Image (cartoon, rainbow, N blue to C red; front, side, top):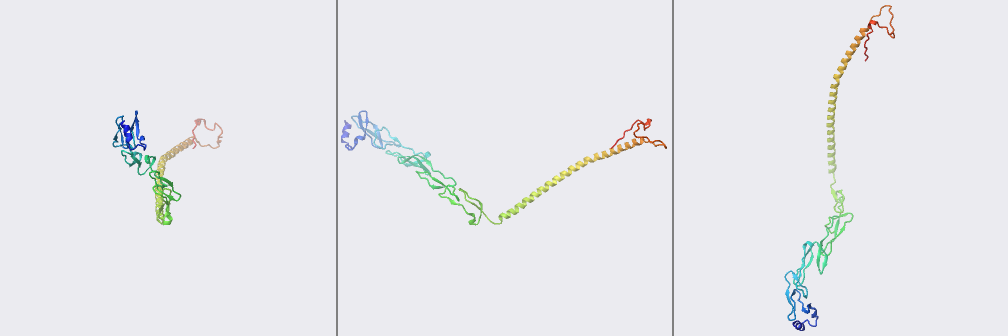
Length: 283
């Protein structure tokens, strides 16, 4: 009865007020306004009792809920920060942190974000990233370079135009390297090369001297070893020769006058008393 009387005298009568109610059992109870929740449902004799949402919770419209919604947490670990704080009548709104862009947006806010792409050396920033778009990286053309942090590529330095010598050509990520012209290079070469040759000659001379001394020592040692052998051979030769001479003389005899000269082929040309035989050595 109370609810019917309240509905009859309600200022929302005729303007759609019936939508601002909810059904509990057989009763149609008035809803609570935004920022509040139902603490006690209506009955036939009393209207709905409402209570304010506590901190960290909200209700963004008329409702018949018995509790408020929890506010959204903008997690920095997901690349988010608070764009709009939570209130009793509205949820918090999150946005990407600086250097991030939103990957999943919802109701003017962002659920998750991702860090902007960092351009690599050899690329330049075609379009810097925003809260809604990632960074656009483009490649440098021939004859230019970039370290990846610039918004454009730079031309390689032409060493000849500044009176220098090209030492190392540039790449898409590095500039050309230039060096000084002049006699310095020839002077260094004129000092270094003869010095290297001189050191090499000294090393070769020392090596040859050591090798020659080693050969001389070996030759002297060999000579000292061979000389006693030669003396021994000479002595033995003399001894053997003397023995041969003695043996030859012991077998000779004078030939008598009118004696027949024996034939060397005759087996009996030696006297019987001397058929003992002798050893004749030949060298």
